[in-house]
Image (cartoon, rainbow, N blue to C red; front, side, top):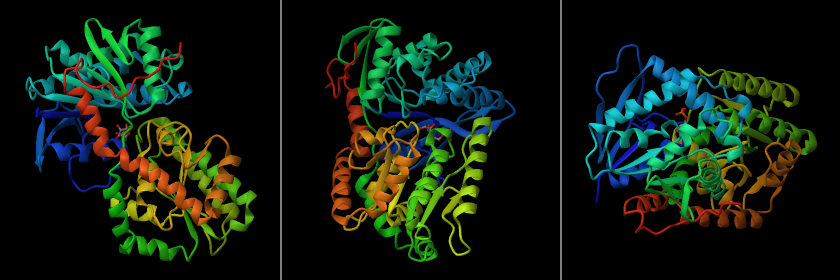
Length: 469
Ligand code: F6P
């Protein structure tokens, strides 16, 4: 079997720390199983020219990381990746702040990654690149003469061409995807959006459903919804609910029902909108006052970017207002914490929660939703309240699907979740769990790699996106 080289901006170098991103949750187990190399940024910013890559080996994975120069980090990570691509790919044109300098930094860091990778790559290696930070990486590798199979998976949404074309220099950036052999997306909507861009904007020749000819290179577009380790996570949750930490949390609730939300502090997660919905719930269903506690765990993220500081301020103020208005000396409706928690702690809290609020305004997949389902007690499961705009809504169709922009509707869904009869909860849980057990993390990685590894013309097409005319 050829060696697998995974590339992503952030690398889950094993250090035992709590993590706050879906990408690492997904890649680490997939790579551990097969073995190989995980290459990317070390997380360190350097004031001088960074030295050579550093390697940490654990089990059968080599974690190879490079530091990033301060100006590169500013222009690539804080700049183009997170001030332009992130908002635009999440349909937030209003938040995008484009600068030519940042675009230059973005291509420069992709080149820097390619330069370092070039020293590691063997001709037979299969390369799997992840996420929006690295769109032009395959092109940078091809320009250096690498002929390896290279696949790309984008963990976040892909908007329709009507939005993508608002990205300055999209005609230079998006067609660079044509240097990959396989392009994987989370949902059919995302896949059909990129296909529509290829056909209507880039005039790429379509060879068949989801197959394109980029100047003689055959490129496949497919849908690979990222999963979780469904069964192992269920086992972890069974153990975790017995830990001293979870017991302490449960004791502190004094028998009240708990609702849980776990998100990075990011405007795409719809946290202020969700808090407003919780406020509507307390207003419209006053019988629940004093009987329910909403725990919102929200590790800070991308703190150097103004929009992230802004959202932090708004969330803090909203929590204060709700607790100030509805709280009693003996009851705090909302517990809001910024500390990241270990996977074990989260698994236990998910199992203990009567409902989860996963209501992003837009999300590629959202693995919190899937882990919440996996963690439930089948005999007495909690209810997932899920935004219809999260990729997970395509699979967790038995969740209470909500419009995160509608506080009345989400408030009513909270009431419905907390009042739901046991038989209905079980039925919904069974349906969602079955889907997630079938398409778990192992299957996600296997399906993607099965498309990438054989010659594209020989491999099975797993999904054929239909492009609206
Ligand atoms: O999936 C989106 C993503 O950007 C991942 O690449 C990353 O793991 C996560 O969100 C956290 O973001 P950041 O790496 O910017 O902290």
